[in-house]
Image (tube, rainbow, N blue to C red; front, side, top):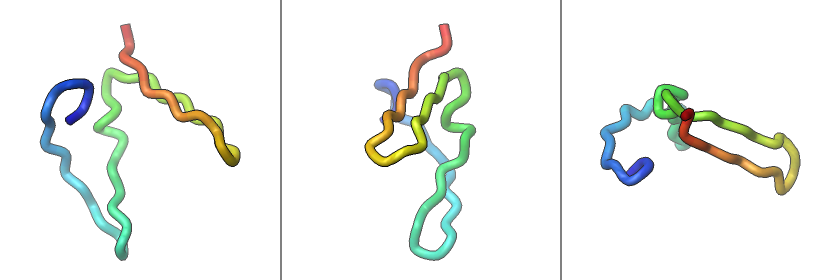
Length: 46
């Protein structure tokens, strides 16, 4: 589920950890504080 809608997302795997590409974030704004305990925000682009 993504923003209330079921979506099929292709996932690439490298070793044991799946990687999700940025295509999932199309039409969204992503903000990340790259520090311990940092905030990650994903908002609709209006």
